[in-house]
Amino acid sequence: MMPELGKYATVVLSSYAVSLGFLAVLVGLTLWRAARVKAALREIEARQGKVGDV
Image: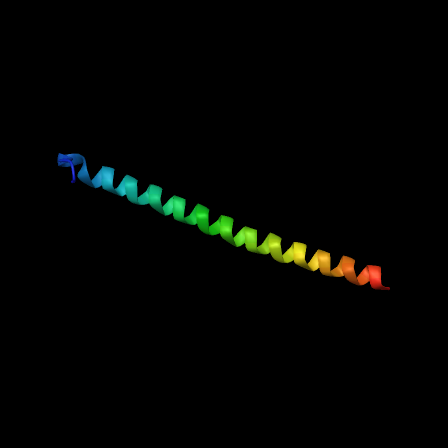
């Protein structure tokens, strides 16, 4: 149920769109960084395991 926004419809709907876009970018960047950190930790743990074997 869409409320009647009148002459402000464009401004309000574009504000919603920009907000959703920012949220999507924030979630995407968070997931991307989490993957990078996870890979770095995996690499560090692998190196530490090899150092202990030497």
